[in-house]
Image 1: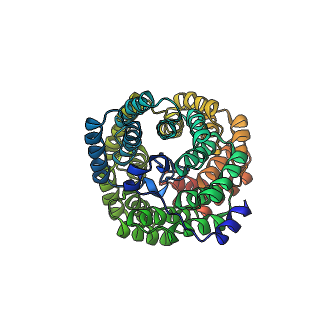
Image 2 (image 1 turned 120 degrees about the vertical axis):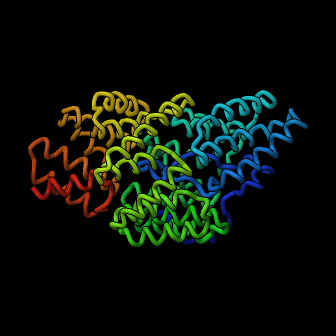
Length: 442
């Protein structure tokens, strides 16, 4: 792990993220993959690279230009590949999963026009598979693309992301080292930062992300890097610092919704409830992706505004149907959501499927929580303990373990983990953080 940091100090950061205009010329360097949700989803899912940060208007212009070109030159396999990548990106920006089917069609057309050595189309298909949360296929396609072009930043980024989601952490370290050696830019440093964070090395995570910020020259790149630094501060319980970083990110590029989401949750954590509610409403109006809507609904529930929370939950249910229809695997997200919203059996079915498909620490934690709400606490403890194997500093992990330990009768150990959750971030979740305090107060 230390090799990344040493490498970062030696390299003078000559490569920034690839812009959308360059992508039209050099398609093999494009990265369009959905990851860190998430902001992180809800506990983490890998970093979105700075080259993914764009507005719907920018991408609409790009898509229109590509469509016009393809009307004139329908055999242009490279343009079909870029169009597919652009559709995946547009889905992420707008929250509209119907673009995935369009991406699938045009990427197939690219491969039809150029079936041999078409690395850009394979990278586009890998990005689409990642966006649909089919990380095994994303990994397979990224490897195929790299056998054709081993120096594509976009392909290397998807490869790293898929390995993270599959829980293949030793392979992640090797792939990241090569990424930094070959393409030491914003996408690489972003993923180095996330890998440090996964392993509990917050100093390394901040350092690597600061290097990404240092070479982020465009407003959207800076907004992205500042959001990720804000997330690191948020997960460390540094709410005022996180709020400041999110505000800087919003000022750098107001079109990047993630920073407004960050401001909403830090406002809530700092007790500025009315402002938090207004900001959450703006966020879900602009980009109603499940993570944002779920957190908004949870805040409303914690405030006793059950009618408004129910309205947001209806939106969540509708979104689930849309995403599933578009081929997106939501087993992990729904397992966590259903386990905490009164649907334990459904949560366990989904968590088992997610665990079958990928063995990341986040999937294992969700599986443990689903086992717990179904009364299988001994199995839950095995999995929640294993989910902490990397040393990830997660308040949600600590909360889950604390509640499971208490259910097994070990009150002292359970309370220790609940206190750890609140120490890591006293506002990590509007419902669970209040529940942890209530349990400890008893």
